[in-house]
Image (cartoon, one colour):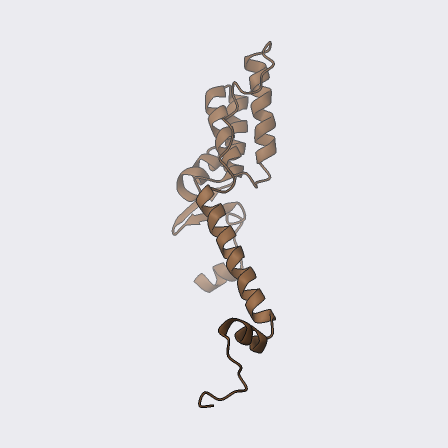
Length: 157
């Protein structure tokens, strides 16, 4: 019986999303994106953006601003710029006379690479260059030049 269910899917399975073990969510559920954030991926930019849109349309601007900011935290996401423009739109609605864009928007983002990571990357680059230089030169001339001995001479002579 179970094999036939696997081979012949039911009409109910087409809209279900498997989140975790025995937890399925229907895509047409009005709380679908809230459940995605709560049970599956709290950092999902898509879920935060779409939930922000729902909340904005419902009139909950404070919650919408929060979810747009959460969507913007995932920078290399396709939902970063739509969330940014939605925040600007909300700011213009809330403060029609203000020209500054920083009232609703989050503060400037984190530095791309922390200083310690920059130092580590530069150090590794230096080591790679030195290794390349050592192995690319002729080994015999390198040893002769820096060790003062010739490889052709025997140690006893």
